[in-house]
Length: 366
Image 1 (cartoon, rainbow, N blue to C red):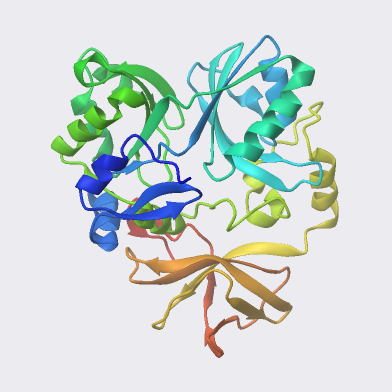
Image 2 (tube, helix red, strand yellow):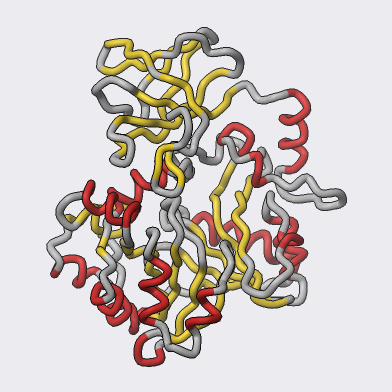
């Protein structure tokens, strides 16, 4: 059975093209995917991300548990509502999932994990939590709407209760706070996102999700589907679980070394493998590619380098750049003249540092 978010009928009423996404019936677009992409880069767009899994952790040893579970260190979370991006690793140093953790009290943390990995994430977290006597509580009664773009924050602030606006306006990046939405509905507003633009991800009780969506639409926020979400996050240099990393790939190999905290005295799952990899060096690296001629870079295409073959991970036409870009994993070392095999034709590509787009504009050298 395909699962549906509480906004499913709303998407269909808007004429969305629906697809199966990790077992969920989700909107890929509402007409023009490229227009939705540009709306987020230039103004404000909103995504139904209610398929994401919210997990609340409670208990006296919750912090100790997260210090053990995650490759990044929750010791960095000092202020209430502060958030951290991290990978959750297996014993071999491979990525079980990437997630965001929120600090909501000494004995209360909230995780938001990927929809497609829900079952294995929950099983792994529950298994690891036993030794720490931590209560693991999934929160399926919540929906989630991401509002992204240069004008996203202003438009969200306009639908909040006036008493909450000054406080939410001051909310820093990667932080969250409670607020009241239209008609006093309770919201959990996080200044996070997956597009490279500023904005909020809003957790809302499912019974209020349609009213919040409609209030945002009335405020001029354009609905956007998973198609635009994918091209936006690729331009912004953000990994997609299952495509750019998985349980056979370590954070070093996924260009996520910045999320690893090798702080003293903290024995997190997979740490010994990551330390060994750091000492010896990894054999594969993740790079950005730009195709300057016409054509499309797609997942699975072969990448040819002086050191051997690699492959395209995420690849797509990038509407902000009007050309194709991709992430690729290739053998370490100077790659020389790099080509991609596109239907039997070796097409030259440029290796670049990503992100490809920042603040709505192409990055230098792209």
